[in-house]
Length: 138
Length: 308
Image: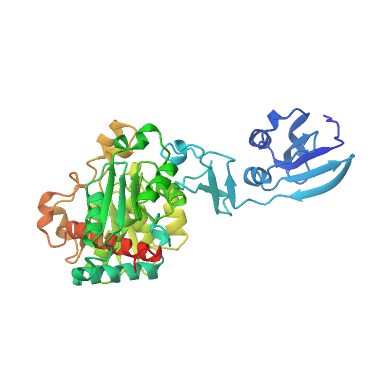
């Protein structure tokens, strides 16, 4: 299966197979006007299977989202058909307005205009907790 | 420390300082009778409370201060849809320190982020209730004379019981303690308390459903109420509410110096006959709570530069 290479844009590579759609949603890629390709279950020598996202525009990307969903992913910036920057993504210490707390008893469920903030409490197990009620992020 | 939201906001040294102040208040109440003269406590209780609200208000009056109260969301601007953040900013204009109880978890934190005066969490839903823990700690201190090498049994609703989580957090900081977690399967301590507190710190603990089997081991028995207000489903509440009822008979195998604590209110989980047992400490705990709240109000107002 071939997807055309991009001239100016970004490629999010080495996404754990199955996490591409979640990244697509949380990064808000469905709202872009440019072409976006999600390639699922690509054969990978290193990972066995992986997902890839290609965006045909050099848009700003919230790296915290990628670090939260899949810290092993890489982001490549393409300019004039050439790879100009490749970055590995680390898990962010804090996530601000990326996900919402699902605890119905949490103050964020009713307080207006409150930032939804999660902090990394266990790096080894990738656990984030709501700073208000300490509920674990799913 | 500007505010107290979680018991872990206090270092063990600060806890020692509060206990020392509380002991001094008990010994010399007249010395503190004018300590907060001219200062006002905002007592914001958006959820029902008898003990905690009265305790805060009595504490402030005994320090020579005044109290402005809001009880129940229905009688304040919260009923008009005012946010917690706006309430905090408004109340900061009228008073010198806030004690807030709110049904939503994290409400006290939001209040502290937006207030310009010290904030004390008087209970935020099922999350934290640090001043109850201060009452528990002073009671343990006065009954046992130490915070170390104790076998602490906590019994009842360990899932929604915020006082239990705070007590485990607080007592985990001292050496040689061991926890016995006694609850029905459905009301066990949440996994994050076990993983992030007990396991991470290497604190020994056992989980059981059988109170009688562990009774002889305990130095402290912390009973809790199964809280109707924490259940979305009335059937679950009715099924679990009578899981543990402590009676005089059940205490026969307990140590002679066991300290029985309960954050109160009690429904039926401790038989009234147990009140006459010298090991029952729960009404002393109520009084201790007032002294610790006095010590805390003093500490926070001093640190805010409001009193000397």
